[in-house]
Image 1 (tube, rainbow, N blue to C red):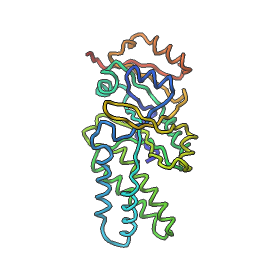
Image 2: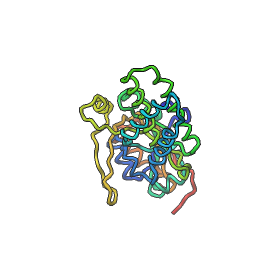
Image 3: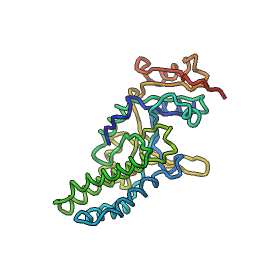
Image 4: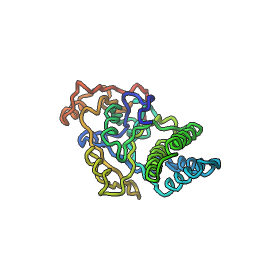
Length: 282
């Protein structure tokens, strides 16, 4: 799960002009509470499936371990935060929905860099780079694979060992709950950088979070909502491509984005700038 081979070397964050400038100038990504994203069944779609699998698990010698997992899963209720990317850097639906109706940008981030942030943060509360799964049958298999792996580890352990293995399995399920969506969203081809909420400010996980460069929690207004989010700093090397939207006024003259990148310390020899090939107009 941590080294998904289907995630390409570059993944793209679609955004409008103001967000583009803000991201590049601040060198920060925002990981937002998934419950405020565009899927009304965000997280609940998967957790309902996982809970049913655990409750319906056949009786037998492993049932007591399943009950431990179920109890902890329902009690823990982690709240994932995510930054969203797309596997395709020139997808018309993404331009229209997330990049000012085609006049914005798609920022290409190195998947290698994103995975390195996960490795810095492990094995505390982990940061995960996951491809979003939209197929119900494959989502069900993710649940059963996770439970099967848990059941292989837990027999023969003492109470503390069982609790630790159970917590790892639960964290994996909560990770997956933020990386499994309704099939209606499949054309988005989404990849997510996911962080589980850290509730205890004195914990080792909190210290690890700070070392990686993840901020305390912030809130931003969106309509009537106050959206919680974390900020994750990135280095200039994290960005390897910039794609200009099909109605971006800089599509044929890259001077403004080039100057903006230079002003903010980016090495243009390491960043490829490409115009969209979509023949879209307002």
